[in-house]
Structures are given as structure tokens and as C-alpha cells.
Length: 129
Image 1: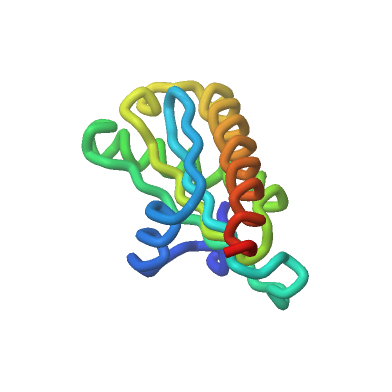
Image 2: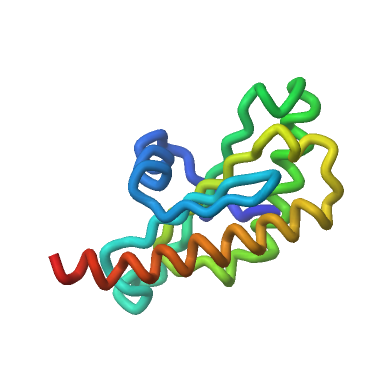
């Protein structure tokens, strides 16, 4: 289960991560990763915040909640891969409904790795400006 201190709760945190974060997609989900302006050493132990978006296009409320529970469990296992202080939003796509746990895990791993690469590549450009 995802620890409470890692849960994203405010809408402005979701908006910031989605609008300004690095995006990487897979067949069943899209990951938005927003690294903070400072590196991990300056975060003072600030936890990474994670949020989930599971729209109605995924399915009924029962199906959306099942997808959200699976994604929460998968992200909880991968929290050490998310830099401290980062904002991570995982958006489920309609194919996520009915996908096997292993398929969601593979998509999450690939999308998280891609978003991390893109965010780290963009970080030096932010520092130059």
C-alpha cells in the first residue's frame, strides 16, 4: 500500500506535474514526472508525491477502483526509483481495465524509466535559463 506521506492530495500538485512534468506513455498508462528545482540532496528528506488519474473512459466505478488499487500497489513497490521531492502522476488509459497485473507492471516500469530520462535531460536546460 502507498504510504500516506507519498499521496498527492492537492489539485495544484496534479496540475503542475501534468503540465510541467516529463511525460512518457505505454499502451495502458501515461506517466507524468515533475522533478523539483533542487536536486535530491537539497530536499531535506522531502518525500516524492504520487497521484493517480483514472477517468471514466476506463470503465465503471468498480473497474476504475480496481485499476487504481493495482497501480497504487505497483507504485508503492517502486517508490525508491522516484527521486525525493518529485511529483509523479500516473494516468490510466482504457486498455488498463482488464489488463493483467504483470502487464500493468511492465507498462509502469517502461513509462517511469522514460519519464525519468526525459526529466533528467530537461533539468540541465532549466538550470541554464
